[in-house]
Length: 139
Figure 1 (tube, rainbow, N blue to C red):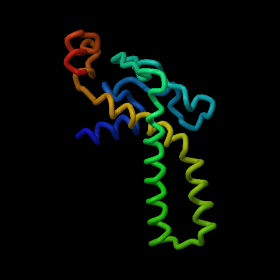
Figure 2: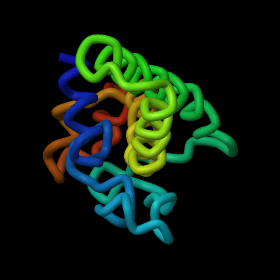
Figure 3: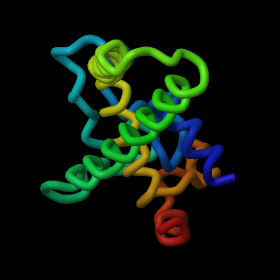
């Protein structure tokens, strides 16, 4: 269930705790001027995304793991389906990495947030998002 919740927030760019508020200011990851722009807090449950200075440095490790995963998929396709030359394979793979880097950046940050903040259905309700009792229960 945790993986499904993480995938949901990853593919919809929604808050990892309430699945309601947007994480990024711009929905389109390919608007390069706003690719890195994140809201400071969730507009629904008020979760502060950037917990401390340098919080998202850990997302670099997630980004690295995603890139390795992409390489494994591409290498398997290359070995069993395409059987391209090394030059063609590297050109195609590097082009894919460049084109998918905005998605990889966003997904790595959202996965990093999912590691620290799990989904709580209690935060779905707008009236419950401000309850002090709920904040203590969901820590």
